[in-house]
Amino acid sequence: MLDTLEAHLRDHRYLAGTCFTEADIRLFVTLVRFDAAYHGAFKCNLRRIEDYPNLSGYVREIYQMDGLANTVKIDQIKQGYYSIVSINPTRIVPLGPDLDFTRRHGREKLADAQGSL
Picture 1 (tube, one colour):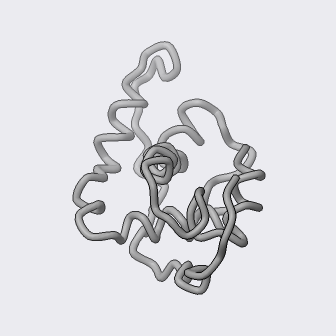
Picture 2 (spheres, rainbow, N blue to C red):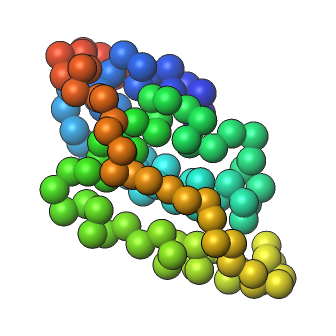
């Protein structure tokens, strides 16, 4: 599904085209956690979101929207997932990855794109 989303977001600013919707918020919640938690804790390690240029730009764009950055607590996300004993019996929480959601996203070029999944 990540490959499908990556292809879609190449030509569409948001999931439903030019409109930012609840679907984008729901996807953001998953994607913003992926590299910090799912990649390591759940062994979803074929690729990171950072390895997808369109998905990573999409995550950064949403993160940079007014008020959203304050809702993302990467340390708490990692602590929560890595404390699940059945997937991490040692309960060791990694220091990384070093994530920078404040980098330029470049998604504004898609402002006039049309279409949906």
